[in-house]
Amino acid sequence: MLTDVLGYDFKDPDLLRRALTHRSAGSPHNERFEFLGDSLLNLIVAEALFQRWKSVDEGALTRARAQLVRGSMLAQIAREFDLGRHLVLGPGEMKSGGHRRDSILADALEAIIAAIHLDGGFAACREVVLGWFGSRLDELPVAKLGKDAKTRLQEWLQGRGYRRPDYTLTATTGEDHNRSFEVTCAVSEFNVMAEGAGSSRRAAEQQAAKRALAQIEASRNDG
Image (cartoon, rainbow, N blue to C red; front, top):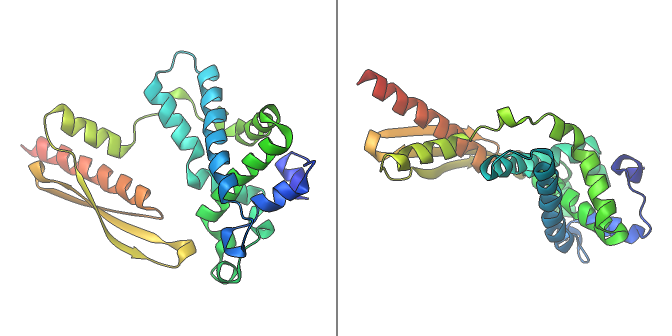
């Protein structure tokens, strides 16, 4: 049963059913639950990081939280629960493979977090969520919380009085559940135009920023 893998037994099963119901299947659906679950997840993870890493600064805590609550991470957890086969989707979403789509899986997981909170209270919700993220918290040491490429590029440029880089989405291909994004990162002061690709726009921008940094570093070394 799904409740067994979630680690929580609902007193009101209707809350779980609603959390699993996508808007394409009609109303009541899980969007309001998703809103609440997103806030609860951020609070629970932030509190866990705050208590665990007492000497870590705000920036590193923020990056750690972002890494843990990002959509791809939530979708990964949802797949471990085989959540896709329990989703209630409309005919169009079923036909297009919505039960495999990262965004739908992540939203449903957030909705389940809200459902647990509404059914059993915050303490029970926190215990369940921390159980889901326990090993992931353990595998995220402070030393590995380096700034991402976009942040490093922006801070390097602004620290030297240059303008921020410009990111442009140049192409989107593939089915809804298997999209690919292509992005360019332009740094005019260095005549740099770097390209990146990924399964999300954010991932493509990160790759483009990383390549832009490498190009800037190479040009400075050549000079």
